[in-house]
Amino acid sequence: MAMLLDGKATAAAWRLELKGRVERWRETTGQTPGLAVVLVGDDPASAVYVRNKAKAAAEAGIRSTVVELRPEAGRADLLGHLDRLAADPAVHGILVQLPLPPGYDPVEAQERVPPAKDVDGLHPLNQGLLALGRPRFIPATPLGILELLKRYAIPIAGARAVILGRSAIVGQPLATLLGGKGRDATVTLAHSRTRDLGSLARSADLLVAAIGRAQYVGRDLVRPGATVIDVGVNRIAGDPQSGNRGRLVGDVDFAAVEPIAGAISPVPGGVGPMTIAALVHNTVVAAEASEAAKSVAGTRGAGAGSWS
Ligand code: NAP
Image (tube, rainbow, N blue to C red; front, side, top):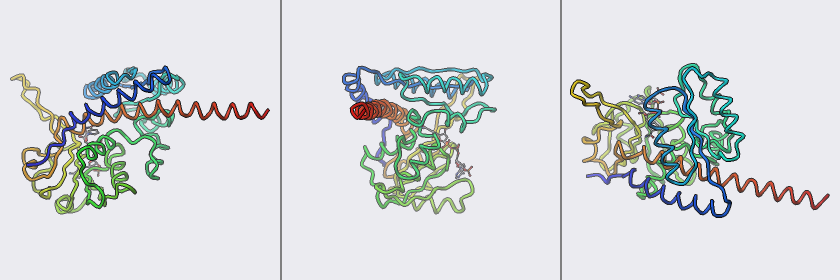
């Protein structure tokens, strides 16, 4: 039987620590960290994610606001809101909920968020810093996974890690982070064109599934004793006539894999809550950094004054 990597409990403990950090920051600066989440369109899943993020931030003592735009609001309206939030000193973190409806360019929106407020870590500059091994903000899902592994003392250095799925928000940054100096895993990033995925996955000490296919990873893809991280969130259809709304499952067939894995994260209650706690973490980091940047600017100002 595998050790359960309980993301729900771990995230709750992490958020409590962050709440303490927010209180200390408020005592020293007299300010409250601010997070703005921008939601465009009426995708019900996105609306739930945004609500959960805003609630978790508020519980940690962060002032959170949600900017909701109709799907037809248009590019200029979205960019206008982002510019307003960028200029607002009470907003320390800005997040554009993805996916955006058709007709919007997510990269353009991401670029409009100032890098210092980009708590999703998706601004090209922040992606570049991460690739250079000097991340400012680690995107929330990879950060949540790293924290989960750390808090359960799962060894990473020297491990063979296989990541299924190469998205810009999960697979790619996680591959960079796990394989970077200091974490030192040997990483293979697999995707839909990968040959012989089975033997590759079975070679992994650490297997991360982020492909968006319900219960795709069965026992045949897992080496006994491996750590399995399930990122996927998939709804299995229910039966509306009997009032059964279906249920959420991951990319891993939990019942089949759990008996042979060494450790496994469940869905729900695994990576999802850790992702939300990671966003809270990034917002606290953004607020703290904004104050540090102000005092550096102040010191420079004072120095310049004394020379004149
Ligand atoms: P994505 O953009 O949906 O892309 C899926 C990736 O999986 C692609 O790289 C694709 O390969 C690869 N893939 C698809 N089928 C595959 C297969 N049979 N074998 C190997 N690779 C395959 O990825 P995402 O946005 O990272 O989302 C993945 C899942 O994670 C979704 O279920 C999403 O809802 C979930 N998610 C959860 C959280 C959370 O907080 N819990 C956060 C983010 C995402 P190609 O590149 O070749 O197309």
